Image (cartoon, rainbow, N blue to C red; front, side, top):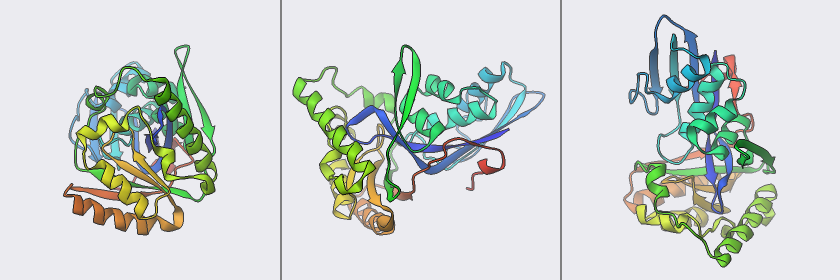
Amino acid sequence: MRARAPASSANLGPGFDTLAVALQCYVSVEVVPASSLRVQSEGEGSGLFDDASHLAARVAAEVLGHDRFAVTVRSQIPVARGLGSSAALAAAAAAAAGAEDPFAVATAYDGHAENAAASVFGGLVAATMVEGRPMQAPLGLHDDLAFVAVVPDRNLATPESRRLLPETLTRSETVFNLGRMGLLLAGLADPAHLIPEATDDRIHQPARTTLFPEAPSLLHSLVEAGALAASWSGAGPTLVGVVHCGLMSAVRSAAEVALAASGVPGRVLALQVDRRGLVYGEDAEVSL
């Protein structure tokens, strides 16, 4: 069986570990019977772990209960860049292996319910753990919104980035983030209410800037170019701007200029929102 899952951008500023949106950048996994385990990967992350240690192989083996299969992975999603590559891969692998609940499997392997929920269900989601079980709910996202992603050529692993975060927050910091998240959710549902300050936060973005000092100027450049708001994507280093669909190309071009001027190597992607989540069979093809 073959399954495809979309990338995701989590947090979106104040929604730390709770919000994520699915994006039209994909990974597909095909699992077929074989006499022994074979792993083949193509595209992003190809050749890194083409053995039993590959995440897709580990997920499929757990779902199937054996390792007599061949798994093929084709990915467009940059690895370790804050675009939910692990959650998408785990979701697609679980689905391709026939898991009854790919969301639960992907959450267990990736550790981020919000990324897993976006990859499985598509759209904008809120997700968290409730009594040990991952729970998710869809949120309003206007049809005229898309995302421009600035993807630096820097490997910023989530554990490294997470070690910088504060252990405790003051009441004012907590209220600050709750207020900004309210503004963000209102603005994503109705862009007339989306302001740049909606993606401010005091939990993770300021701390992570020490790993990517060029981030604030690049975020500012996205807004200057026409993005309604901009934030880190997950643990970074990818940065995303929320844009009107008609401005995707213009914002992307301006972001490419800003990225080059910063001296940071990388690329800029213009991405529509994925609203389907997991798909199976012929619809699960990924072009590279």
